[in-house]
Image (spheres, rainbow, N blue to C red):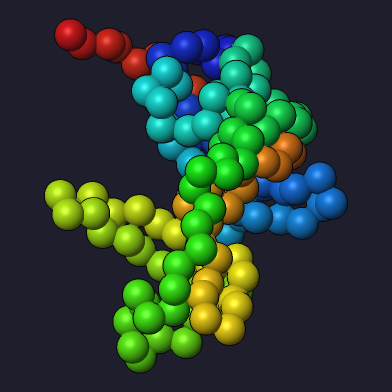
Length: 148
């Protein structure tokens, strides 16, 4: 198995950066990321960037926001009255919150602005609206049998 193909299971060392060079995630100091292509486990641009890479090959890819976490969806940004938050909470910009719907589904939110009587919360992925840069290294390629 010389090149990464659709449905292969691969192990990859990676460093993810924003366009300003800020690192937001890395496998450095950890086990390589292992996953099967085509399973929808990772953002589409990451998988596309690995196709046809060879074992031990290194390269840098740039993923447009559309192939990463998408554009910012303004419908996921809401202003909430502070009295709707738990009484013992002191909201701060960047703080993560979890909202639970009546059916038990959880949504991750983060505080983006704190006002006198309210907070602005954002349900977009923190990397939505951003182009991403990944340094990749393929460390293992396995041919995966698809069973139906």
